[in-house]
Image (tube, rainbow over all chains, first blue to last red; front, top):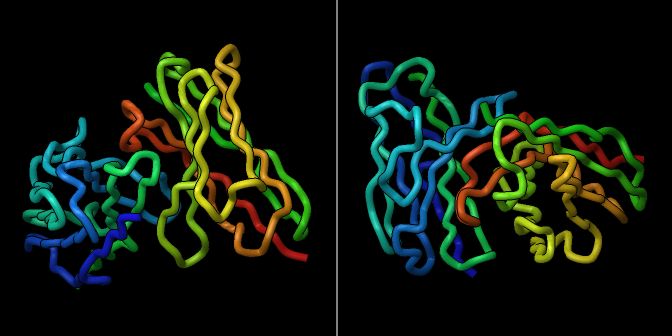
Length: 108
Length: 118
């Protein structure tokens, strides 16, 4: 079973700054990794798939990178609408998908 | 526009049952794997069940195996989740999700809350 670990648990950032979120897999998942944004009371939203491909409609300030066991989501020039919880999820060991525990990006 | 709308959540006693439904629109339902993901209060996301396009193969997280059953009716563009032998730890918002090529979740519903309590 692949375990996904995200860090940090909470990230305090000012609007206009950048945020770097990390996700680590307990074993290689290749580039079979997605990132989701989740705001309270809303449906989660896919923002990155294949580790680095932005989903349709995702702004260019979101950038995913990494492969194997180490992944990063970078949000450049944070906007007010970007404050949310972000989850990584692998889809390598079908059908045993797994999410990380989430990183909350909050306003500083 | 892709839309997934869940219904059927509510309060249930431990040991009892509930049926969740998800009505899909805006895409050819029978062309996609579908699934359920849940979020318990104060917790992260957890995949619960996946079902292949024709409904012939289904997969469940260990914690619900044998208690939950997912099914679909492609003629009605509908997905279902039967929750049996409910436990307090099943309390969560349940999201209906569409899987792209059986991989990641490209669309999510708004969710329906299931509360298990006596």
